[in-house]
Image 1 (cartoon, rainbow, N blue to C red):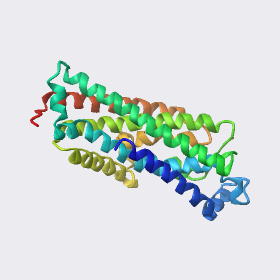
Image 2 (cartoon, one colour):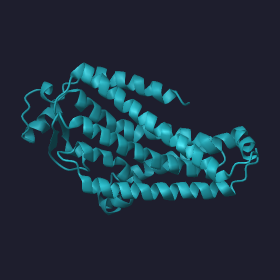
Image 3 (cartoon, helix red, strand yellow):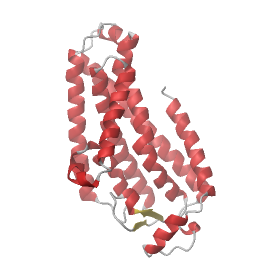
Length: 268
């Protein structure tokens, strides 16, 4: 289970490269022209940076959260189900230290997954499509805003580095939530099913415009703040607000996980 996500992500990057070679990008071309960007064909905006930025959306919003939820479910509920957690707890180690050490491992796993995908998709994109300015449609990256953004080629690597770090922090918040659920339920399957149910429910709430007043209070909204790195300028104010919210959710979920694990009756 540890290595399967890396294999899946590698295959996915190869598939994305193949798809980008075949696509004509007629609709993005039209939208970029309507935004008065100087483009006449797909070659003016389709490059390695464009591929990597657009690949991040589905992977960081859907695929990597699934991998992290499964790994987190195995940490407590999975080990309790398999009988190895009981063997750990008979040793002279405090439960708080044990679950915090598991969270550190999960955080390192989140970082490895995010950096592996980001590095792989950037290398594959640059080797196949080259470099250049990064053009993005705001409706895909900036909470439904109209128009398009252009990031100069010299700034793009720094933007990707910042986006990767913000995305990793968001994934650690999800890992803390999954660890809390794992300490609450009795089986690994139930742990990641409940975690993913919560995640996708909150993600679905963001699709209803009538609930826009609720967006700032949803942890998913702040997990997606890495998208703001691909705007014409870095929205430092919004990013700072999201960092504060993410740290709050991280402390809340992790504290609840410690309290629940301290009260957990490990019978198997």
